[in-house]
Length: 460
Ligand code: UTP
Image 1 (cartoon, rainbow, N blue to C red):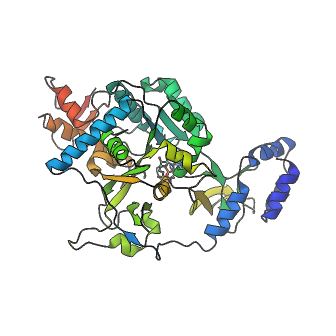
Image 2: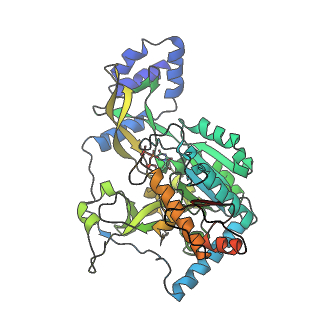
């Protein structure tokens, strides 16, 4: 970008404060500004500011909302046969190398308040394995089980990309083939103060925010990884977020249901705990399946009950999805299709009064689940919260490392129990993914092995 182009853009959007500031910079700082400004979509930022932040309209008051069709947890023999059929189908896709795994890890993790990428947080109950290690070991175990090499994709952001790559390198990719682990960084957008001014991170850089987890569906395409996967014969992308240690990576049953339904965008849901739980809801919006964030849905819907007194819109989004690669290609065909949302956030920035301070800013994000209503065919499957969903969001309290550790431990205690080994409540149990990926495999493998019951049990 030339100086004149920068001046034109800043003047057009009433950012004279930055023009004044720019003139005070050294030559090398000015060059740095011009280099980074070229990659930032300032026009998009101000279009979003005008459209969404001035008079933000939330709530789906004019929409037609209904519960959506969900494949339930198998109960009777017929449902169990269906699940078995789905599993066999999913397993054949894995064997044929048709599935890749994406872990999105570009978020700022501000609620957890941990220095460093969230994936490097030591979480497992006995061995303190990091989230990245837990996912990588599942990918390794699945690759061995199905005689293939499943590609692992990690989406980072500018802030944590170097640390994330260095972490995998230092740990020898946790036994995965390095050429099958792909890192790509998501896009960012400048943030804007409440009165519509661009703010600075430091004297020579605008303050920017990652463009949301929906940015993964753009970055996978922009980075060339999508084209590479398609060229290798891969067809489906299993998507999960770095903060859920219970996720069943590339679950064959989920893959099978997704493929049997010829779905382009599939989702796992859990029953909402109660009407207050802060979780997005999977429902049918104007005839299309969709997820609506709890903060964007009218309170009457969030608290609606059915005739039996159960929560009507019970399906809580787990952020575990499968997207077909061809559908991701379609989303990128004529410019990126996902809509943006704006969110208010407090950030430490340098604003037009030039004193660094915590101020409220608008940041702009896309949500991955906004792809669901754009799909022609979708699929949704209910899973057990205890087995598959324990997100780590907060430093303590609900959805914290403590609750996630307990959930892992409790789940693995049930696997021991199924193998006939009883442990007292509160026992810390951890079963390595490299030993068993699920209860059935565990029960098979543990036969004939002596397990000493102690306050901490690790099985590998
Ligand atoms: P959250 O919405 O929980 O955000 O992300 P966060 O950034 O991790 O945490 P807070 O809100 O600052 O406390 C859910 C998942 O989406 C990823 C996160 O890394 C996490 O896996 N994510 C989120 C991205 O990859 N990029 C983003 O821009 C936002």
